[in-house]
Amino acid sequence: MSTQGFTVAHARDAVFEQGLRSFFAYRDLGIRQATEGRVTAHVIRAADGAHFSSQPHRHQTGFQLVYVLKGWIEFDYEGQGRVRLEAGSCVYQPPGIRHREMGHSDDVELLEVVMPADFTTEEVPAVEG
Image 1 (cartoon, rainbow, N blue to C red):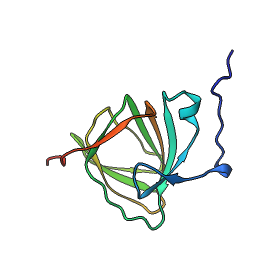
Image 2 (cartoon, rainbow, N blue to C red):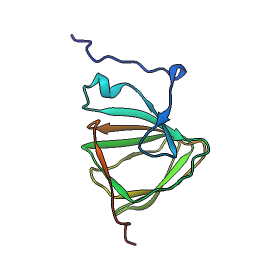
Image 3 (cartoon, helix red, strand yellow):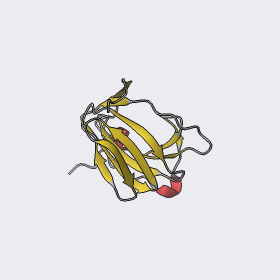
């Protein structure tokens, strides 16, 4: 048995930092380091006083899951239309799916798990009707 990579992240020790989107704050859960970059996981929450602005984009991933812990968030997904996620909702975003956030509650908190940890994001043209 190996315990290499074992990690625990407690809410009481949480540190939120700026990340991919300026209107969100990100809490790293230590999974990137524990898995040597194979997976990343973080809690995302609305950043106080930050202006919301989202452009259509896609992520080059192998796997991306978003679980809403608190509040709500709404996306426009290519081929799916508008999807509103609320506390307890979970979405698997297939690799490369074009999407755009349409809005979120001031108290939104999400758990996001992505493979690989070093995925890329590219802005793309808007999803057509």
